[in-house]
Length: 293
Image 1 (cartoon, rainbow, N blue to C red):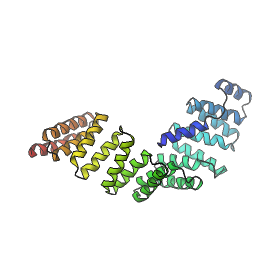
Image 2: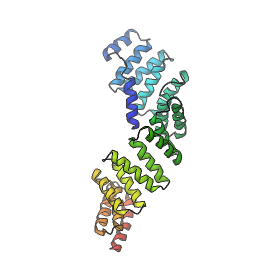
Image 3: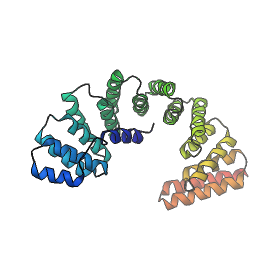
Image 4: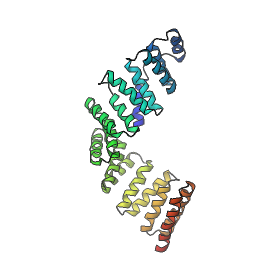
């Protein structure tokens, strides 16, 4: 399951608690300004309409009134993830855990927030703790694996993705990330199989076609690479890298005119993006193709 979808599910469940209307919450807060529960419910009301900044302000008033209200820290942390304040979310999840170290899903959410700020080592520790409480949490395995992959711990990452796929054989993110880990280990055949699994689940996954094309290029399957880069281009007409690599692949399939055409178009796109180094470098490849004709 996608990380954003997972966050949405948790937030939706939490923010679906009974709440006051905005008008009622405003009236009550004026009448009873010291009631942390009023501010908490008002924050939930605002979070439900995606006013996360307003929700955070209310949750802050709630914890200022009662700094032991764990639910307010938890809700404020979730709201902060929605505005990209992951460091602030981590602080709030720390507050929850300081009161209740076994709070459900908090280690997982703190792990996701730490992953977002690339604190992969501590994120892995959080996912480890989450799995102690919930050993069937496929998303904890998935995200731990992604952190391990980003740290270059490819074998460990593959092991986690394997577990995810035992729990859920249709987890597209596990296939995609396992393919990347296998690619890094130069297991090109294994990576090709996993990217194919991704494509079988989602025929419109442009990056999977692009990556499988790269893997097939490494396997000297140039015709297969051309086919994959062509589909990636169909899905994204401005994919400069796919035009460039399809052009190189067509050199080996002896489609010289088409190779030059692709390389020229990639060169045009690189100029539009002000990537002048790429623009000049492609000309060298065009000369190679011209000489091979």
